[in-house]
Amino acid sequence: MKVKRFFAQTMAEALKQVSEQMGPDAVILSNRRVDGGVEIVTALDYDENMARQRLGNQAEEATNGSRLAEMQADQHRRLEDELSRSRDRIREVREKRASQGASYAGSFAAIQEEVSGGFGDIEPLPQAPREAYSDELAQMRAEISSLRDMMQGRRPQPEPEVSATTAVQQRLAERLQEFGLGSDLAGSISRRHKAGRLEDGWKQSLKILCTGVRTSRMEWLDEGGAYALVGPTGSGKTTTIGKLAARYVLKHGSDSVALVTTDRYRVAAHEQLFVFGRILNVPVRVVDESHSLDDILDELSDRHLVLIDTAGLTSADKGYQEQLAELARSHHNIKTHLVVSATSQPRIMKSVWHCYKMANLAGCVMTKIDEALTLGESLGFVMETGLPVAYYTDGQKIPEDLHHAEAVPLVRLAVDRLKTLQQQQAVAEGLKEHA
Image (cartoon, rainbow, N blue to C red):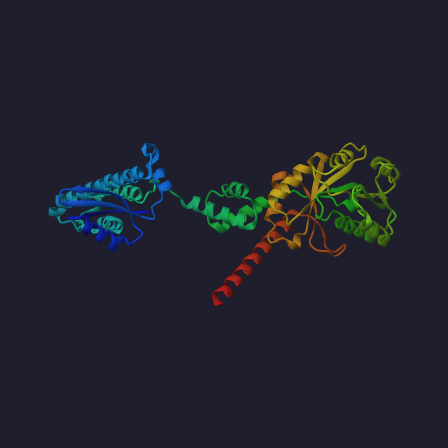
């Protein structure tokens, strides 16, 4: 909102000035007779709600829009009076120091420009040494800046002092967020960089990520045991089990591996798993009312590796509690892993983790790495939850697109993905400019 005061000998002349300088959209806040004529206070883009906010507690006295406009005009008059007094002080400094004939004019010129830029023409300030008037100049600069903010309806805010280190930390946090990390984690990591260049902080941050991302040292195929994959529908549980089973068969044969599914809640839920079983010549068992999970695992105790597929249920689905409790209370040492899609939003990843953590999660598997724009979201998730990453998948090929997870290659892959995204954005911007 722009507020301005006009003086003229008659009301007609004042209204003419308003029309010429403010245009037809000007709102008259107040008009009154003064010595030598009349005074009109006008505003452009007048907003009653904004006016109430600026007046604060005083606005409570206004019972109607007319009274509020008058109060706004009174406030503007007071501010202009304060500005006039500041101008007088500057003029006093000029008159006081003019006789000394100093040669330095830089600081005063800056004040002159600052004042005239917001409030009209001011007479040139005198030349004087910086040492003699620095305190006065600083005080006047602060006063004028405060007045300008008040005239424009803003609360004066002190300018924070930003050190070089803080600036680097802020830029580093921004880059880490571009990488895909959440704002809290990015800020926490960037603050560990106490001094130095941005690139030094970036390298240090990547080392922190490599240290913070936990991975499983042993491969399931060699270690053996019973492993269950849990997670929402579409996260890639069944396909990942197929890849694991295919890799095991290629390395050890099909005699010591078996597949199990606990999904008895959906029609035709077992079809894909049975297809894998037929292709690999591996037995597939189904947990149902007649065959409990422990009963089936007892029968498969001679198998070196048992992979357990589960239904993608949420806390709102029937059977959710039953399925997780069955895994948690088994007398077999089932290592349950959460399957997380790298294309999911961080909030969804966290929600899924809260949904399945009652199954005593031993780690996680990251899927659909190839479909994600950035991987920082997934890395941030495993850092914040502390879940070790056992495997990650980056395509549909069985079993080629399954990889045993290691922290350094994962972080390096995430960096490469960020560079690819930045290059794509640069190309898109270039095409946009030439369009």
